[in-house]
Length: 326
Ligand SMILES: C[S@@+](CC[C@H](N)C(=O)[O-])C[C@H]1O[C@@H](n2cnc3c(N)ncnc32)[C@H](O)[C@@H]1O
Image (cartoon, rainbow, N blue to C red; front, side, top):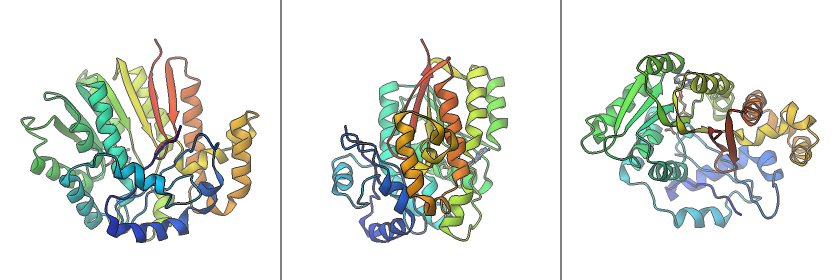
């Protein structure tokens, strides 16, 4: 089976994206090829004028299979292109925070499959994935999205109003909860709302003018928070009986393979990761390994949690699908 990833939909940005990637992707991505049969693909978002791109764990970042996959997928409509442009203007160093186009489309089709009434997103940013998912919902459904950065919250709110997501007439409704997600979760618990889908997509972003992409990568995610949110979600019954949690970035640029637990493990996956770890020390300086360690801890926590079943899909930057055990 081959897992695909996404490329920037705008060809004019592709060249700059690829050169940025060449600076940033070398060891981890090129050295990590799980098997010839299963070509696993990690996301690699970039910043600056580039909306987003996925780098693969393919030897060639420009592998034609990626362009092929995207060219034969239905694109998201023009309002998403406009949102990318607005994101570049508002957060030139933070454009990698939005999910890539192909992931937006994937989330949208997942909504069409699951047909949830209530969706919760932790991590709205500019509202890209919120809108992508909302477009996959039935009329009458509501998507709640949390954002603590005031500027991102204001801009998202403006977008949702302008594009018709606040009235609930044209599309499913989007309700933005501004503030820290931990507090928003408490509000939702008090309101006794249960969610059929919860999308955990919350980088701890310092969105105010990080000086460089590398710096941005170093600060942009507090994925360590996942365990707390996950436990709150399960313990407070925020997740409906047959609901799904989608946790994003659970491979975190491949750095999970370098986590101490993964390295110490005797299983086959860990022996692969050891060789990656040995070959990717220079990459460690660029991508925050401590976040990879936290994601690895989260992944193991979920796998060992008898309340749930999980599959960690090696698509995009790793997407874990979690549901209660039957
Ligand atoms: C990766 S971005 C979300 C991208 C968005 N889901 C999309 O694809 O369009 C993560 C967002 O989470 C927000 N965030 C980080 N920590 C948060 C917290 N504790 N509470 C609420 N929002 C938070 C950040 O400000 C950032 O905008």
